[in-house]
Length: 122
Image (cartoon, rainbow, N blue to C red; front, side, top):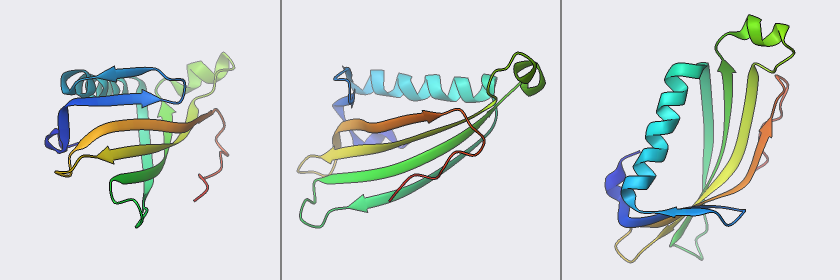
């Protein structure tokens, strides 16, 4: 993402209550995801839908789904390991008065180890 839309003290949290704070830490999460993508994932597809609540202009919800095909499929399959994963979730972004994201929470994360995984509900 374009990190200029985030505040320097942006918070990333999940539904378990775990959280991290600071733009540098937030950027490292994306660096790690990009490293995993380059080294372990053969193919990735991401779909998303932005949902804005007109009564709450300071919150943006993004429902997203990703399908990941791992490298080394034949070896993994011979060991009985899944090679295709679907990860579905909702990202909620809270905006400050200047329109910058100060809080990003991950909700309803679901990992599905099945090539026939359903698309996320609206």
